[in-house]
Length: 408
Image (cartoon, rainbow, N blue to C red):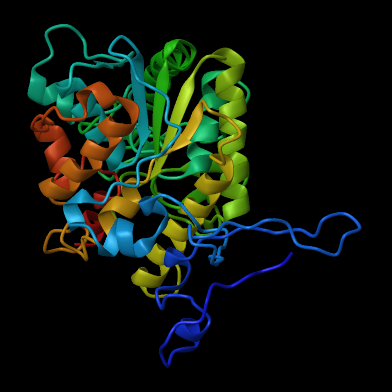
């Protein structure tokens, strides 16, 4: 490769002495000029029109979004828009399902308000008052699986629904004598009367999960945590530690697990393969929740655990959503909320929950990427349940809030 610089310019800086602006690669054009075969001469290179040769490099003519100064520092915080470039379109008639952490609920509400078909297979019994239905998490997600904070839960949800994984754990008893489902312990605030009721309700639930996976068009998955609890005897992944919302904690029976990026990526690929085995045309959007973890069990500061968790989730999502599969796309909600542009403006005073302005910014970008014909439409106000989850006042919808309540 031969690099040819332009004419010298006056100035004391080394870059200026070589004809390169001090801004570096942003203001330099690039070209490789290979020698002609057997000639010992360089190939033709571009000039600036008067015969003088212009310095060039691989960053020449890249769009503004590739440069921090132009795409982040040089635009208002509310205008930063790192939307995916190759997003598929979501049609109004597409059945859009959600799972994961809180951002998936905001996506669901925004899509519903925009006129899309938010898909719910597990609905409340006819005549159930709205407040009761919300408290029992009907419609919070597309089925009543509760919060799915980390990927092993999702993989095992599929396997439990199709009978390829049958956990040893069947039910936990609460201090009040009522029973809960270990895999969705907060979906019935009043609990169940018996272990048999837990099992019967789970069978109904898993049937609706199968229907969901087989008939959805778009699946929005929000990754929340890489730290979670398991039952090592069979590897069952749990949304909460026993003792928080049911059951009794025994360190000899349960373990806190922190998954690395490799395990998360393997889980994601495993779930995608499972989903496509029953629904080949399904499309998936993966994002990382910007909401920090509420507590860590690891012997370190929660800020460190949270930073590690989000980095692992983002790295794994990046590996899986590498562009090879156009039906699996990463959406950067985490980056929009936590990026340098907003500089913390999108967090409430608790530095954890997200402001309405932050959610609005995320949804503008989301609609611009996946529903460009509606990108300018206002995002409707969220329902009480969704607002409560994001504001951290509903222990029913956000399972993680139960941790603080359990130690209050």
